[in-house]
Image (tube, rainbow, N blue to C red; front, side, top):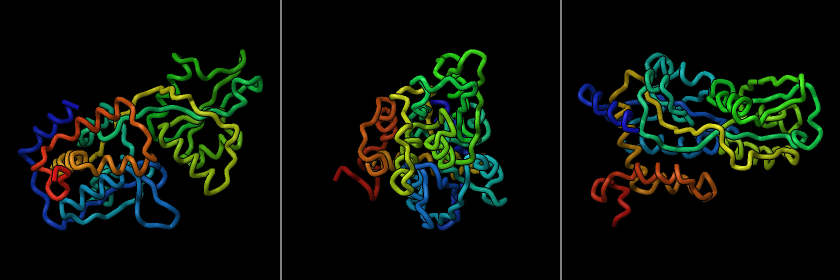
Length: 293
């Protein structure tokens, strides 16, 4: 968090203020609830991170041009930038790592979670004597790291003597969770909050039978800190996003969005710390959304 804050200080002198009504191309995911998603044929994006980005852009008086992106193409689009047909700002569950810190301008941490898994019940109940165990995860995400941990140090994914474990990359969470509910995967890894939300939605809207799918009992195989990512050539936008994050967490809108998108689920200790640390603006600086009056 300190390194990210220092980065904003260093680029502040060279940032050129954005002009009112300037258009910002913002990348949203359609398949990552409760962070960023679209319902059916609707054109609006919903979710905790999507709503945060919309608030930031609208508070600044800028025009928002929404662009649907995927887990696989999101960083290619961000590297291109809005002026070259890509995006200026990425609003999806973007995990912070050294590579992304080197290539993009990241906001303060906006969410803390971790990678877990869904498991078909035949694993561990005497039905798992097959020679191959299929382990799925979303292409282009850090879930592959969690799979490696579960396979190696944690010894969660096992097979019979002489058997094999095969990784299966999928293109979206709907496909991955449908496969495990249908018994076509043995494990499916990803952000545990996203997995829960997508599974619940598929069961409610499509009648998907997931009775034989179990969770990881709260066990996490990686800790993920999410940030909003701006194109490396847009320090002006990155500074605006930084202030917007502090505004939304200070005036209560981020907390309201969390309650709405996570069904008022209790926060873990790490997420509570994120909300507390981002609420940095005193009462007199939260402008139109001042909760102190």
